[in-house]
Image (tube, rainbow, N blue to C red; front, side):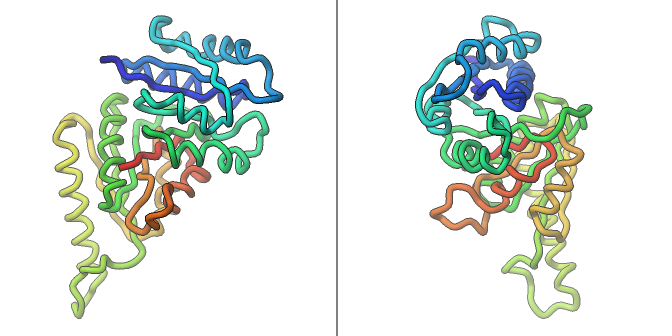
Length: 267
């Protein structure tokens, strides 16, 4: 059965960039694309907005696999409802208001927290293909789901996959009272990373994997890695996340700081 990607569009330049990115992604995945415009007081006519979206998407995806829809209500809630049958929901990082922080607070962060599928926020300026997908992992259920999503993304792009495991303190079970506990921690983390990659990578034998385990603040490490990536993938919540928070601090930070499109994946 053909999978469906949904992209939100509001007529802004950033949302049209998201439409173009989504159309290319749908083509890579041999999926259908549905462009959704949410009508609220103020924006131009929804049909004219969707006409622009179709003109942007059409060079990347055949007409039978490209559809449009008009939704009503609060933008984030309407997009989430529109994505109940989608495999991925895609949004721009800024909307008609042009204030990145405001949009992330009102739309992108909400859909990333509550959508029933992975959410990709299209960030960064258009640039040449980097040939790399980056995933942040920490061994949590969220990062395991992110790792599987990242392998698939790398496969459909024929990209290499860089798996970043960054930490600032030795793991709790690191062996105490050794001459150099940092070396022990490094070895344990590298072994755990290698095992996770070997297991998750079994269905993707053609994907070239680069393990990247080092001591650093995760947000800083992932922000740096995103500058040479086509896509950054993170779990919605990691080991340190509070149970009542649907979006962890690393995912939240990367939605604001990533230099490339960022995918947020729930367990």
